[in-house]
Image (cartoon, rainbow, N blue to C red; front, side):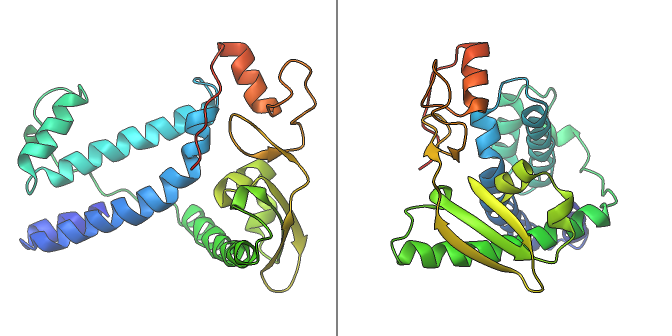
Length: 225
């Protein structure tokens, strides 16, 4: 994204800058990254390492977007920059530098997105058949020969696919089957977890949410639409 915008500016093709940034914000950022990480942002402990890591990513993204938007959206970029308390005018700063991408990580994300598409199609069929109301109610069995799915922690995969109950099985071709999960729904994060109903103090919370509430005294809140 940074490389494409810098190249477009050098050739005065400002419309390409607009389309590149709009595509990034609407698809890569909003539909993927923010959608995937919103659970940890709302429900993890404030000092959770993965929550803090996501905040850092969002800060760096904001920084890059403001700098890249500044020449064509001058006043809005400046207002956003000053509101963030980042210091002097954004118009006194240089564009972000192009950094080498980690191809292994990019390949892993591409593979996970393919599997996410397979799961999404299966969930949509289950919704049409009135088997489930939403993805968090689904117990998903994913058959795949992908090595990526076996390398990543189960909880991280469930977060990436936005699921409550995921089982990975070996299979030659990627395929997903859906049933309704037997787990109860957590009143705070809305995920269906095996630990809901186990606690005497907070029987309506999963173990993660109970730990956060007990540690910080945070109120329960509904985060999913």
